[in-house]
Image (cartoon, rainbow, N blue to C red; front, side):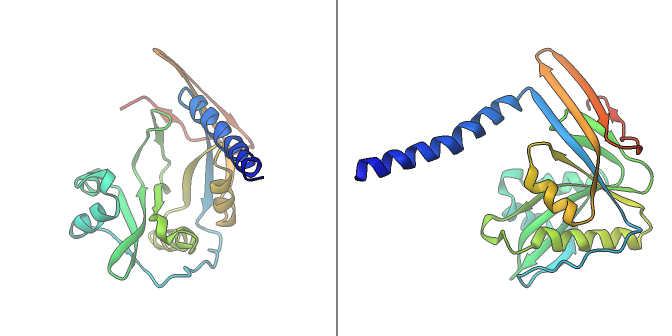
Length: 214
């Protein structure tokens, strides 16, 4: 009986792992990202964190705290982010950063596509949203997103922009709840040393242009 249960568990685990490995292998050379946008003229949704946090726009004084939050980024990550004109918004809980996102309003480089994304005046691009594992499922990302939207709404920006991998259905669902809608798809095929790019608009709104590699 025990061996049968164990075999079932192994079989179930394989059913989960094999598709993930196949998808990871596929996306090493074929990548697709959906462009999603949200107007800042529309009313903001009412999302709040289930954890007591304070949201802050980080500065040089927060470098050490950010490095403890994302040690894999190294000590200079936030400094480089700020130096190129990007911003970082974070959620603090009990004196520690538990969630953060990077935001750009100027030049944007998208490593997943190996290309830049040319923003329009008034665009705000958010990327690298990350929540510490122990603090997930508290609604931090959604509450922070509303905080950031309100910040840039007050500064006169017109819309939020993000890119989501086509395979990230959960991420698209969250963005749709925040009022984002999809404009179209960027595709990137890389068979060393050749690269091909193409894009497909899904409605009448034009897609943002991609620029060459840095």
